Length: 243
Image 1 (tube, rainbow, N blue to C red):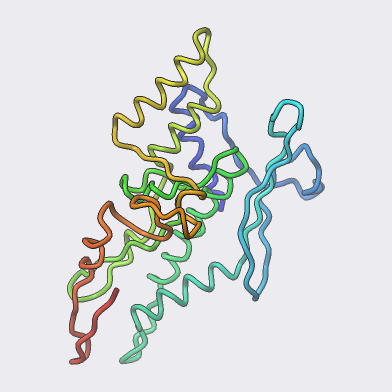
Image 2: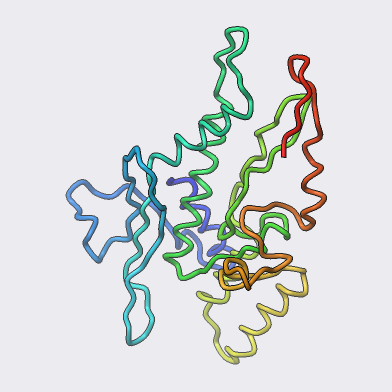
């Protein structure tokens, strides 16, 4: 969680704020409800529950006063079991399941960054997957491939902050000496000129809001091409197809 949370410092350093975004262990004497502390709360649970990132803001100015993220341990178990089910590693007394652990840890890093993004004031961007994982604010489907007739989990989830995340941090937190309106517009124009896209919840979630670039839990810029990435392969003499 600490690793994923610290990814955001990359975006702040990109606009000139060195080590401005820091994440540390909360002092034992501190109360997590204390408004002076931004908190990532780890909840141990065996039942389904949402991860979320919220904030307390000053209603007069919109200033974010406190951020609070809640993540649950069941997420680790779920992703671990998904990886196990895909690879089925236990034939012939093979007990090596480190690949499943690494995939689960990669997901929790990404999720930590995602929920903290909400506390910074950022919405989902469900088009980020069409721009080579341009934002941690997308919903990432694990990106898998076949290598030597086995599933390769090494690139299941992205590492680090995305190009769109740097755009949003620059737009929201950069300071300008003058001509702020035009400078802000230039940030967006430059981003769109690079091909970056932004599709939020209202464009992707409702039944009447379907969008070619805004589907949840997808990868790549062409969905039909993505269906052909994992070709049928042979395992223990049985023909299988993974979609």
